[in-house]
Length: 335
Image (cartoon, rainbow, N blue to C red; front, side):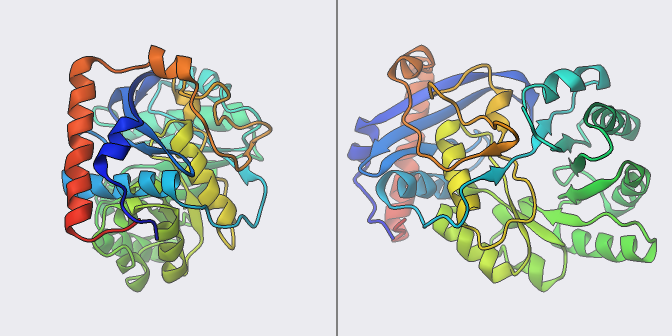
């Protein structure tokens, strides 16, 4: 565990960046983040604006771990990566997929507010057409469905060969009930828990209630690579490492986690830098031949300058970082 550095040391080496998105993703058009340098490298602090300080403090702990601690030893030198398809019209799917060179798995966003199940199915069909029969397709509803709606959606989408459905319902109890309903209905779509892991006070409840077949883990929301490894071990379920719409600095931490997992059965959702128009790194963490390799990222000084957020947003993020640092200090957290 790394000792909590003084907040002044973090702010002195911090850069607040604002990166435009190619397409809207989870309601975001511009991604803001703080990247800062420590003795071990660069860390990232980028909780979404609506998150409160208690939740956001875990993201700061993760960034501090990256910048101030050694990474766990990797057990693999390549990490397979999936393409990520936002809730775009079917005709836009090929263009999105073209930014994920060599990826043979796609995660498709579904249950977008204002869209219908027909929209979801058309998008899934477009992905299947573009990628071919051998590709794997997984869907992500971000907890938007109730059990009845999820059952119907998975029944109809199963025809396209769904690898798994990520967080189809919001609560652990709903996920557990959905798994029972799917089993009774002979609908063979595995369930993955995401928000029920990363936003939960007790991330192990998913395993105890048999609410998922696998877990999706993200470095920043869980407080760092070390904490994520411990949660995966305690859950005892297969894990998929995913991003939290990170810059290449945060993606690098995700790849370090995926490289250190004892077992990795699924492609990871770490190709999301392709959703940005640009990045903080001169050589971004974008997949080649469908994989990423573990490496640390040093942001390009020119990119940090070009992408610098407005003075108002700089002040907002620096104040937020300081508040979260006080929470970590108050609770005795040492990441």
